[in-house]
Length: 122
Ligand code: AMP
Ligand code: ZN
Image (cartoon, rainbow, N blue to C red; front, side):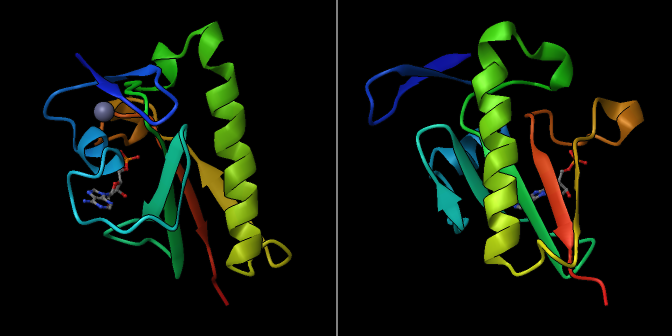
């Protein structure tokens, strides 16, 4: 673990070698569709549907299993931002799917919490 300063001055917990820590801290050229102090949103590199976005907290949290009471606002913001992204992509009315894979048996391959938004089937 290491700590990274963010614009609001609060130290942020990150994990060395974690791809989503690297992406969310701007170490890669991944384009953000949305970002704020809490989270970033970018397109999945291997989309499972016409729209496939990842909503990723900046804080390194391995999985749902590692959430603490203090993380509740992060989770709530992830869902609200997903809702807004669905509107932006014009899929709110047609419908979309939100899911979180938990650990290997649940299909998680990147061990930094993230919410999938998939949509856009005809
Ligand atoms: P999960 O199986 O829930 O851990 O999902 C990880 C997701 O991250 C997969 O759908 C991958 O396609 C996606 N992914 C892996 N590397 C990248 C990357 N560099 N940029 C965007 N998405 C990625
Ligand atoms: Zn991470």
